[in-house]
Length: 154
Image (cartoon, rainbow, N blue to C red):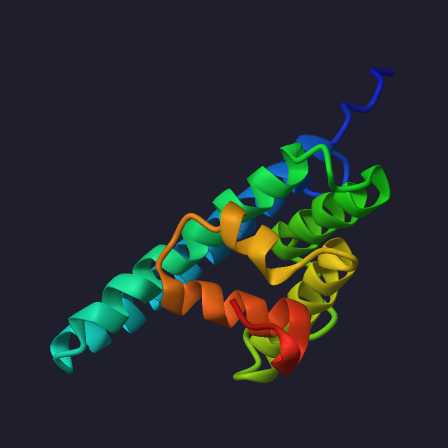
């Protein structure tokens, strides 16, 4: 009597699950990119080219800011761990509130980002943040309000 062959399918093949997860992540990132580009394009069509340029640069500027904060020797190691945790949460497909829920899905990400920025920059000044910020002043004012509340002025 021959031995039964192992069944290769969704449940028994761990590679299949990883590929499905990777496919889902790629589709999610592509959808976010498309929505982001549509928001920038709608500002261009509305004749607000300066705002469109600032919005187009905001996310890359935030990524540069986080990188600069991660390599800044003045930022304590525990706060750098918070930044890495925030990055992991933002790219993870698992959210407190799913991103497909309008407004609330993105609001939890923004609130968490603001809380982490406040924690990382606690004991710092808006001027130090301005030194690390690579983008235009409009984007910096948004980040300063997120990090320091209404009291932060650069």
